[in-house]
Image (tube, rainbow, N blue to C red; front, side, top):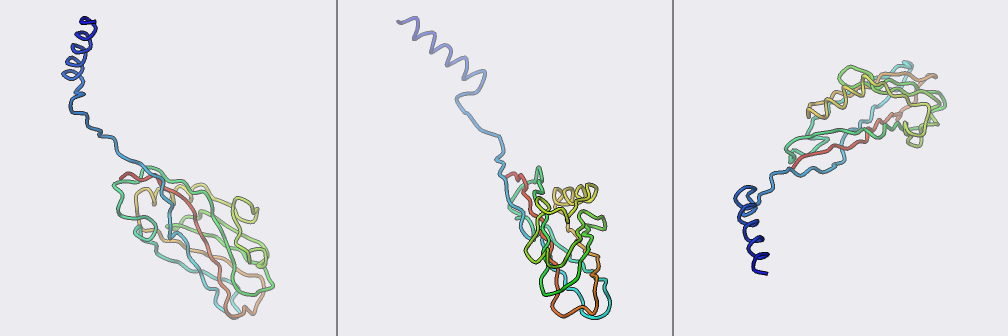
Length: 176
């Protein structure tokens, strides 16, 4: 019994000296998944005879991610959604760009987008991989993003009150 206790004591002293068990400190960082907020924009369509529309917004990093995180390690975009607002009987097309590069496009009857549509369930929305890379890298680097939409509608005159809304949903892995 005495030999067993001596072995345990010797092992404790050895491990404390070699491994530092006596002053255990954890240096690992803490990572959490955080939803990205603020990556959405609503673009008005000018009433009248011109069937083309366009618009752009500047989205600062502080609009879509808290500055409380040390770093952002990964980005996951899990949905892109399009919604039209207002009453219109024609069709709509659009190209959504970030920093000048298309990352999504959509086309179909205006009424099909009256309820928000998701790229996950609607074939009228398409994703452009090079533009998604620009979007993801911009978020990773916490840069200001310039989101632009360019498109057209099929019938004129265009009534008052028409808008198209684009939403990007995603998450980042942030380090505290």
